[in-house]
Image 1 (spheres, rainbow, N blue to C red):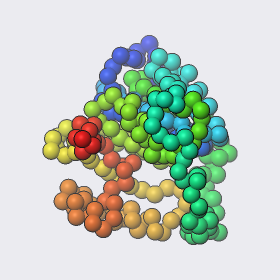
Image 2: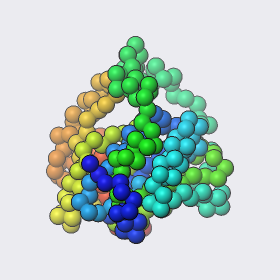
Image 3: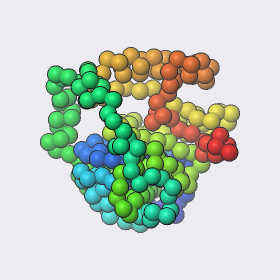
Image 4: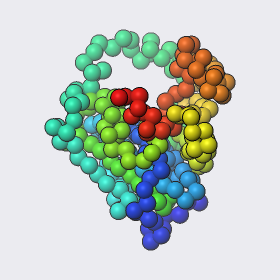
Length: 258
């Protein structure tokens, strides 16, 4: 199990990976996501998990602040003043007319029972102490939040996270995603270091939660794209890799945005 002994942690170790995590009303799933990130075994290297809370009102921010308190010197909380960001003060999605109600937009959800694992998580959500007990000793946490607590949307939260990345490699997760393999990031990192001409690497996916036949078909297709050539061709059909499955070189992202 990962060591959480604070006496042996190295707060000055520079992170190898920055993990971007936009957060908005993500309970009770958020603690699982944070735990899966903070227990990644990088074989002596560290990561920083950067969480941007986008005006949550369901206890997501309170959980993040509690885990930050437990992490002590390995966590920082940064409050963003209005003048520090060009992001709009309102989430664009909140001012647009809904294209359909939930049942019409996600017909496969209708009449489905709540999955057992979701019921269990709702009945007994992970606590900050549960998550802290699994944290690798050198991983760090950055919490970002807007002072006015307005919801600006996922894009704004992701951009805010990106502006605080300090590591040479960047990964991204959704706040209800899981990554159970503790060596997942290590494997992806080694693949990027071995293939210096790659800008990014992704991994296969397994769906959890509610049964979604359409998503299952997409994931089955995506999981067959194993080479750079297959991914290049696949982009003319659909998105060949979910962005939260990937790890990128920070230098490549900057290069593409110049």
